[in-house]
Image 1 (cartoon, helix red, strand yellow):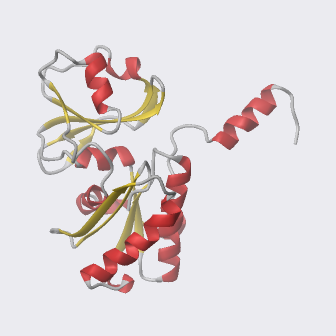
Image 2 (cartoon, helix red, strand yellow):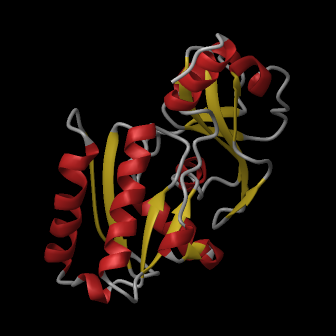
Length: 230
C-alpha cells in the first residue's frame, strides 16, 4: 500500500503479475479509505490475509500523517496475522519503479515545500533499479542546477513537471513521466520488494523515514531556541 501522498493505493502481486490494484486521488484521510481498500482487494482477488506472505508499504518521505497511517495499518495487520512479514519501501524508489522500463537515469522528485523537494536518483536497466544516492530533501536549485543530462533522464513524482519547466524546458534529453507514472502506485511498492527481498522485515523493525523534522520536533526546537519550557 502507499499512503505517502494524496493518492491512496493498494495492490496485490504474486511476484509475476499484479493481481489487483486500485488508486484513488482522495480528499478523505487515508485512515478512512485504506483498510476498506485492503478488504476490497482481498475479497475481489479471492484471497485471505493468511494467503499473503508480505505486506509492503511506502515508508517515506511524504505526508507525516499519511505515512503513520500506512505504517500503523501494516504493523496492525502483521500483529494480527502471526506469519505475515512486512517491508518498507522508499516512496521515491517506488515512484522510480513506475518508470523502470526506461533505460537510463530516473529521478523521483516530490514537493516538500516551495522551492524544496524530496529527491531520489536511480539508474534503470529496464528491469530493476540501482540507487545512485541516498534520498534527500534539498532546494531544487541544489538538486538540478548543473545536472549532467548528456544521457537521458526521466523525471517522475508530483514535482516533476515543475522541475522540467524550470530547469530543463529546452533540454530534449530530460523527459517527464506520463500521467499514469507521475504519482504513487502500490503496484510499484510491490515491484520494489519483488526485486529486493532484503526489504522484508518483522513488524517491530518497520519504521518511517521522514527525511526532515516533524512539526512536533520543529516546535520543540523553536521552544528550545526561545528558552521556553513545557
